[in-house]
Image (spheres, rainbow, N blue to C red):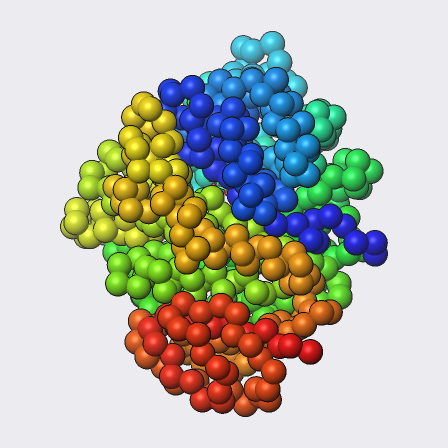
Length: 560
Ligand code: NOJ
Ligand code: CA
């Protein structure tokens, strides 16, 4: 296969609402991005993926789209989008939009028609969504068609009186799922996608892509996720989109899927397949759950980080796609806590663990996605009131925790540790009002540590996290690190993170301690000719046995 631009890309994920507010209404916007393009260029970014910008009541911050063809007034106008694309292209930065094909907002015109038998377009649109009649229990009371649980905590069904039916929503009740078995619906989505392509966008990140097909037998199950996740037929739909829309238009795509076998991974993003170019998978995320906790269950309970699991997950994906497809590497996105607070240590070892995470991730092969604010070491939020949070998921889950016996304090700490809002607070540009994000109180509070943690403070400090990111990105490009071949050393070690990434030009050895205590590592390799190029304590010559301090991490380059 001829080499594609995205194989050499450095992608930056930009959370539009919280990046930069240009008109001081407290909400990030397109002009804000435009004003910071030079910043992104200076960092070395070559593509930006922007969270949904479409018209939306913002129940789920724009993943609930009421008009696919309109730009949300919060973010600007179509003219701003065109200006951004043009100015980004002038800097050789590509623009990737978020494409939401699994659901719409309940305020979308399609759904308004679909739920109302008196609407003139009811016949056409009713079947664009997924409906089921009520069931009745022994006492004759109406009950939901199944007990399936939504990703945001409540049931997946919402009753619609006008038709005496329930509609399916695997996310919030304001996000009804689309029916991909309806040809007209599919065609409308294709038309819409093509419209954005014609505007000049370079690619898409396809939201919730493994959920678009459902089990239409609607069997009883709890939580029942298997009935709306990775059902084989979804590949048919994705391939159809790929063959008809993405590939003929030379559009880059990355899908989102919770997990995949090798066979599936290759269907999604094998070089010869036509669904996506790359896949965002979550194997290495949430490697620190306490799965036995029943008060704040699932991802919500914090346990010990399983470092082996993180290594094995990356290793599995490198092996699965080796020579057959292309990997993405990233620490986290807008759906997970801040990496420095999550896998690092944002109190005692802020700098050390921040750099350790940068070295361990960004010397691995694949195309990296840097999440907004990660490059300056932003941390989880410090919110004290439930009303400080914004995410729709937070409120259903808070209620669930309380029902399961959590105290208010436990529930609040859980949200500060694990909620998606942790990654969504405004970017910390400088130490002025609202971290330089906006002159008005932002839509979501800035984290108070912005006086110490901000870009301005790091720009001129050569030892800062920001400059570490910048320098690694530069080296990544010069040395074609995206293109290397990786192998882990002592992969089953519970505390260390060690690998060699061999590129055409050289070899990089990363030796790191993922823990807040000292560990000893033994390297059974020929240590000659390795030069220490990055360190987070002191420069160290390579030896076969090393005592690593808490979060100590070293990067060596093999001089050929
Ligand atoms: C995945 C997105 O990343 C997440 O933020 C969103 O809530 C769901 N899909 C629903 O669109
Ligand atoms: Ca604004």
